[in-house]
Image (cartoon, rainbow, N blue to C red):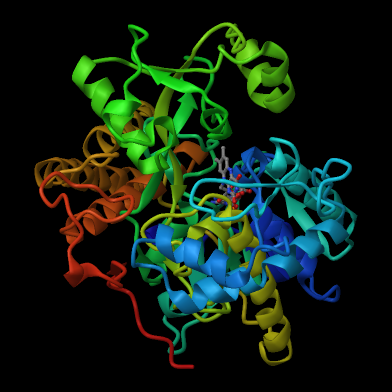
Amino acid sequence: MTTKHKGGKSAVGPGNHLFHDVLIIGSGAAGLSLALRLPGHLRVAVLAKRELAETNTFYAQGGISAVLDESDSVDAHVADTLDAGSGLCDATVVRLVVAAGPSNIRWLLEQGVQFTRSEQGSPGIYHLTREGGHSHRRVIHAADATGRAVETTLEGEARARPNIELFERHIAVDLITASKLGAHQNRCLGAYVLSIADHRVRTFQARFVVLATGGSSKVYLFTTNPDVATGDGIAMSWRAGCRVANMEFIQFHPTCLYHPQAKSFLITEALRGEGARLLRPDGSRFMPGFDERAELAPRDIVARAMDHEMKRLGAECVYLDISHKPAEFIREHFPTVYSRCLDFGIDITRQPIPVVPAAHYTCGGVVGDHDAQTDVPGLYAIGETAYTGLHGANRMASNSLLECLVYSERAAEHIARCDAVVPRPAPPPPWDESRVTDSDEEVVVSHNWDELRRFMWDYVGIVRSNKRLERAKRRVDMLRYEIREYYSSFRVTNDLLELRNLVEVADLIIRSAQHRRESRGLHYTLDFPKPDDAFQRKPTILIPDSYSPRSD
Ligand SMILES: Cc1cc2nc3c(=O)[nH]c(=O)nc-3n(C[C@H](O)[C@H](O)[C@H](O)COP(=O)(O)OP(=O)(O)OC[C@H]3O[C@@H](n4cnc5c(N)ncnc54)[C@H](O)[C@@H]3O)c2cc1C
């Protein structure tokens, strides 16, 4: 925390201090599932930076993996996940998550999620697809807009619950911890939260605090994620004394629509599954030269090949072409992709789609145990913001929504077990703005924001090297210094808070990448192009200065 929190000079109006039993920061699949699973007598607050549904969850297209077919098995799903994770998954966690898959899908069905059903005469009630890395059909989905179905259903349920209060356009600034306030025994006491509507920072006090803030892919110039994915939970927990793990493992999705007005639209890999080809700007195909599986090679190989061709040719993008398939087939199988591209004047039944690889998923995050507890008592981390050990060095498609569901259930059960023994703590001091003014140099924020995302893309992206990482580290150190100074002088704004967190996360990614002197899973470096057994089964764990091990 900064000096802004000391002194307590601003008045504590009745609306400035709020108390809930559970404060959930984030309204995606992880946050909303947790809110719905907590006992009804607990008063729950859910925060969202924008509108409730503006989450990574909403944009998920493919589906959710779970063992739902008789020919499939937990063992097979476990084996596939371990294989994708390249020797860095926690095998206990993988089994725990996979085994809980079917019951979590049942829970979603009970909430009212409408998954796509099997065609008449086909086995099973629900249609299951097969995605990269999965040895069986086990991805349950709602056409090509699964996330939308999940998010809107959970939102509807949450809005109907009297014990859940939803705070849209409320941004958590920092966590409040007892140790930072001088107490002997540490505990998370809540968070300072900026309300966009009136620009006031309020104290949200709670007995239990849960980070469900999603990933950090906005740290890169190109991303499939919406604007909210700025790694706030990872940065806040790091400042609060939590360990963070495996941040070097960023998954890049090969095909994000490249168009000046399309901020982040993913073109599902099912297009490649159905025969779409990747082309250079001159129309020639390049994937067969990189891998015998061509366009069907794993995501990281396809992304690396695209990056190579774009850098070699100085091209801004490459092209994905499915126009050789019948127009009716394309419209029927890919309605979302078809209509979204048409919005930008691209008719995919007749034209190739301009695409770039883009940061897609943050495999690392806040270290949590099997109950989602972090290093700070009373603070939990669930969903993409957490590091559980499930994904290892590479996330298998559709395992992430599953992880959100399973850990929301485990956190809810743990909070319910602890409910009776955790009293309401004394109120923390209010936010102090007595020594800051309004900024007269917003350009510092916008300039640094662009610079950060550009150098992360160029130096810490799909292909890394020692030199590139050193360059990035020098720049991020300078930015951290500038932003720290700016932050302690000026009133907080949405953009400043996000930039402050992005810089923190960038630093964690660079340091983790420098630590891993090998190539494994999603981390590829020209200086150590092969895996090294010395790093096998060793996650990269970074420890903040303020870390102290839990005593319970
Ligand atoms: C385009 C796309 C397609 C995908 N497809 C699939 C798929 O098919 N299957 C699959 O399993 N996974 C998929 N994923 C990944 C998956 O969607 C995410 O990992 C998952 O939805 C993350 O859920 P979450 O609840 O952890 O976070 P999110 O859904 O991202 O929600 C984060 C929430 O935190 C809030 N927040 C963040 N910071 C703050 C703050 N400081 N203060 C207050 N609130 C804050 C945000 O406003 C938001 O409400 C996809 C991702 C993308 C982007």
